[in-house]
Length: 231
Ligand code: PGA
Image (tube, rainbow, N blue to C red; front, side, top):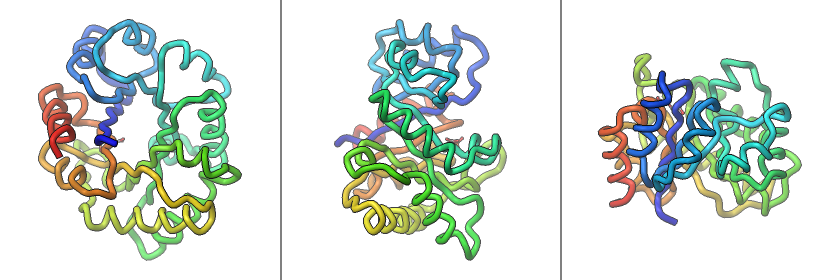
């Protein structure tokens, strides 16, 4: 599969006109805009695949499907840590995404790289995928996104490719021993820019990147898309 680039716009940009402009410039990406722009952006034919930043029983998967949404981010650190979403809630959302035949983008990652981080990743992985059969888990794009590496603008530093691979290996081992999954697609997220995208995207073990801040700058994001195409 060619490398995947997902834009997580969070609560940006400030106007619909800016959102339309940025959307049109993001051809080749999966773009997850704020909910309030989904309807208008779904009318634009731009070579962009539409994604959603969340799902919930209150925000119907049917509506997302009707809007042409194909991918849904769940377990993002803003929700796990900012809004206190437990692994159980993320697991329920994952099941909901699959029930509506949407493709899950499942974020996993430790809050700090302390001596317990391996155990933390193991238990987060087990709880996030609990009760799901092999074929459903294989539909997921799994994003390793260490919380401490998110938001360059707030002074975070990206993980290094080597240590991201170490964490991906830990998650893979859990998926293989607990869920019998031998093949899955892993993405990296956390302060990805055009300066470091190649380091991650050129690795065989990494199928793509999830980009926050840098996806809001059209020139910067175009560079990342170009790198993804050419690795
Ligand atoms: P960042 O955000 O690229 O700005 O670090 C990534 C994310 O939160 O998904």
